[in-house]
Length: 298
Image 1 (cartoon, rainbow, N blue to C red):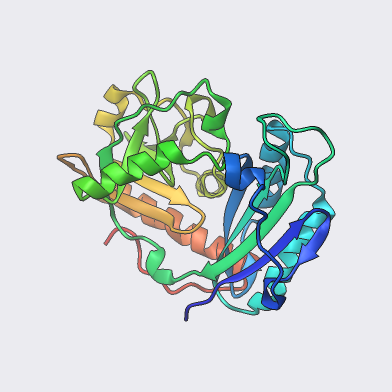
Image 2 (cartoon, rainbow, N blue to C red):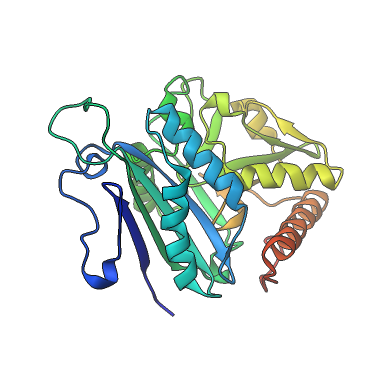
């Protein structure tokens, strides 16, 4: 079933689009300059998964670029959407901008931020779909603060996604200035090398993904050998398996990187499927939603 729910908090007041309140002012800096941050989380049966992690990261990333988010206003906007959502599965996006201001790059102080929350349907069909990756043309500058922020400046990722579409791939692998693999356009990257699970450190230029953190926790709880390490070209070549994580698709196996086919050996496939089942159990425990989805590796 298709739906779009949204709530806006701007200029210190709440807006309800159902009664005709405008969504975003034409002078909002998020619209004009991409000046803001956002977060995307999944709700199962109307209950957000890892909600506190998502909210904390959103506030933290906003603070990095100098936007002070009032937790009460954030909760107000989120609650409006969640209350209307009921027990539906949904993808909930929260966008925070620096608000409205006159022309110029750095505005005078005192403008309240704009908070916009939207919800659209989430489907189990989004989970576990295999991904074929191409190589992004532009490297990620791991020294830029934007590399580790979920900012509204997503053009580099959009251009990489365009390349994926043009080459018939599902997503694009992004490397940093040193040639280390760091992520894809929409997901964190994990590799299995000699039975060990590896994900790039954020210092290499990847986002501190919420699902990345959950997967690290669940893998450690299962007793897997897992940790952070730079995915150099040599290490990537040795990978027995690759998989992607994000808050919407959960865990997604990589079946090809360019012309290289990736078929996980039985041990790696078994471990990845165990990890996936642990993730589903965590979602069930936290939200009460028992998701009926196939294992990512058959």
